[in-house]
Length: 375
Image 1: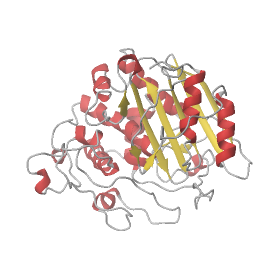
Image 2 (image 1 turned 90 degrees about the vertical axis):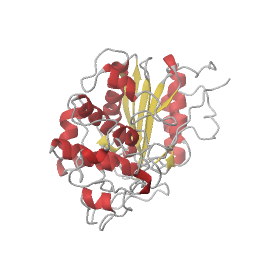
Image 3 (image 1 turned 90 degrees about the horizontal axis):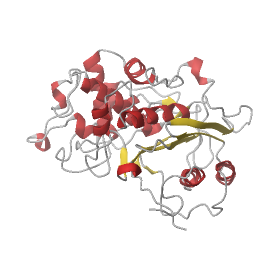
Image 4 (image 1 turned 180 degrees about the vertical axis):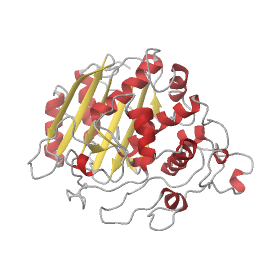
């Protein structure tokens, strides 16, 4: 029996899914059986998933515990860090601002940046950094990803992150290749976008995201607030590195909100995916129009749309994104037309390909295209 192999690019230093690994050997195993085996075999304390079928969440379930003490079970409302899946959710808000005429996809970003500007150099003489290029990772901007900050570490301002000045722990975000000339993943670009959105609206990023995306999509468990407010901390899982060691302070703090700062649940990520599916098929997306949704799911460079990875065509067109922060891994995959998909989050950094095998099990149990040997 053949199985469709989806390719996923490196996200914040992690090739999350569909590596050159063998499929889960018990091909008839249920999702629950595969999840239990992966958690046991690879030391994953807690896992949460949501499965989409025909444009609805048909299953949401938590497994294991929020930490290794085993005192608190993972529930469907347990919060996990989304890592780089923060990017496509933030992209949706940026595209809404484009439709409102407050941002442009193709103008030089320096036209709207007021508190900080992209430094001009020999690479920007003829081609400029634009929002379209930022969203499709082709703006020529540096800084791949962000490690975050320990609970007792001083936190940089957004400007310090952009400038790479202390206490920021990453380099300055600069253009070092001609914008538009190549596809290269850049979390730094999304920090430029975060500044653009703040300058344009005059609002803090968490409030902006809450008003423009999280509330309209009923992603009620989710927040971009960093640090995580105390009243939400009790609902959050504790992160663990791949060696099983607990992240000091339970998790890292990410002032790099647009790139890596989303706290969420698989069910809320599924709601985000459903909004894209509904917008694409012309039903209803309360954030952006059908035409903008279709732009979002149109390849710009490489396999990148506007904020999402893309593969397939027609009724097999699917969009995806992975994420990794210290102690947390996440993955989202959905079919644009078919209304199927899954979101998986767990409180461990896993390098074994567990998430691949879990998605394989979901695809088989719910009869996704390619799961039965069809191409």
